[in-house]
Image (tube, helix red, strand yellow):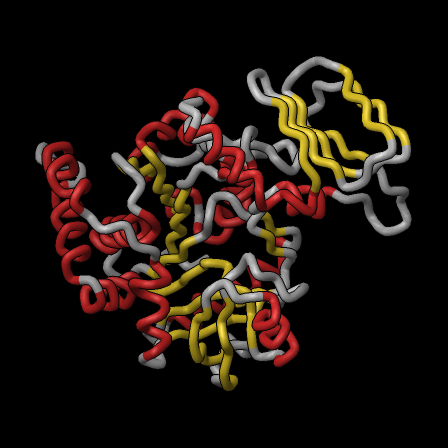
Length: 369
């Protein structure tokens, strides 16, 4: 175990495509959406804590989720759950955590791992991260590129270049460029070329290297975060946070650090194929929970509260209510039954659930958001 390796778990967002299970007050990372017995953030902890050690895991989350995160992760030190007064996207979250880690450990390597992703092959994941830590010693920014299963349009892509021949990181390649979520025709070209990987948003780097790029590319954000970091844990903590945080620009770490570093030839990709999924919608959930090959298709019930009657159907049911749910003659159905909302959709329309959330907001149904 590398004692200088620290894991940052950004835990934000409201997961609107998993509504009404995921809400602003209780986002998807706090839920056991895959029926494993552990929430998504708990599963993330289970993956990364053995790599870095319990004492080197940091979580950045919203102030309103602080108590829920602390309750779900009793192993973490309360001082290492960083509460954001308001959402400012991943550059501010990861940047602040990196600054606080660097103050504690100037030789630190940091890795950011989202709180709401699924990984099925944890052993392979750890081998990939071992390579990433080795590659980070070069001073470059390291990311993990996921072998694409299909020409997905919901993910960004990374164009990979030549093998670097690094000792201890034999699969490491140079990253040529990051690409935005593509149109279907472009996604097919990416996948068919064999050069592109999905961007899973995992970044591993020396804390000093990441902060150098942040300072160069967004000096205003860097300066604001530096003021907050210097005051963190002191008597000036609350006043400084209240004064500086609202004025920080909302920017993703990809735009502030990864893309400029790639353009300068300073990003390394470690290819990974370990069953990654961002659990972005109910189609993802159904795919991850589908029966193993050879088993009959059917309706999978998650939540354990409903009595399911299923006839010639397939799909997934989430229920928080002790009621009977009967589904007859429907394929790829999604049913989510909560105390105040009943959602019925299909896997093919799973991406459109967020439109229902927008509609609820337009109608003033704020208690449902």
